[in-house]
Length: 401
Image (tube, rainbow, N blue to C red):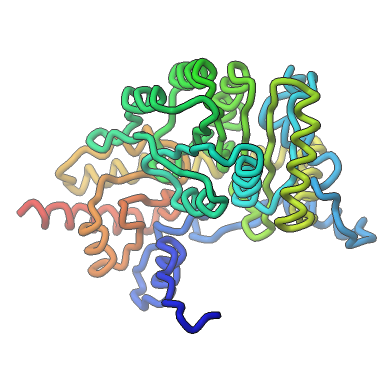
């Protein structure tokens, strides 16, 4: 069975982390890994999470399976974050949610659902996008195409090109959109652009699938959800894959959810049956611990207040590092303008650096980033930002000689 197999190349991001670990340079900096890091360079456990875990440990009396669709009550708190309190779509019974093993699991359940009910569907992902999107939808044997997203000269959304691509999508196609903090570019749609996209999707019968992994990391929990809410206001059918890895720091607990909005409540219940069928075939039922943490934090007023304060702290630290990097690059004589980094949102940003410049930064300065030039801004600290900025300037000036 296996004798004919050839070695698989390492994942471009996980492989980068492995190379970083092997590097013995004491000044090495990892700007590739997609996890939040605090000012000391660590990935902390939130205090609200620790408090919830202590309560859960004290009260836990069983390790029995969860239902196929997940922890009871989990869907309600997920929908509360997505749609807000007293949302019409919830009151009308048009939304159903299943708990999944992380946001990746939510995307895979969505892909399998689409493949089961409409296998001829073409899925459109942004260019660029999170590379694993191609793996997930391809594994479900769905046709995958791309639409232009980034103006690479200005490093902002190429909105006219995006809207033109929308006119080529067919009724029943699926358009994958990043709810906020676009990965990998950090360039987000404005409220007016979300409105235009939503109206066009509805008019053309194209179904939006929102990858929503960073709620709270852009402008805040409510502002970051405006794109999703605009889509739901205009489109009869919407799929939303949520992740709690980043905003709860629950990376290794694999906590996610897939929410499907249908045109009618009766359809929602039918879709829920299909979602359970897909989940049963994939992983039978989801893990409990992380979901219990999220549910407890979001339903306990004091824990929720604490969590929102911690989330605000993470978001503000990223904003601070964006400004500091731009200022330091300017102070060190960068031969180009990097102010676009301040306008981008979330953990990730496209720097505009070429693959060759990225290679030189790694080889000469032990600064690790994805070859596309994407950086994890949370990997910067007050201690290393000067070194990183100086190295970037040196590489840029070297290539302009």
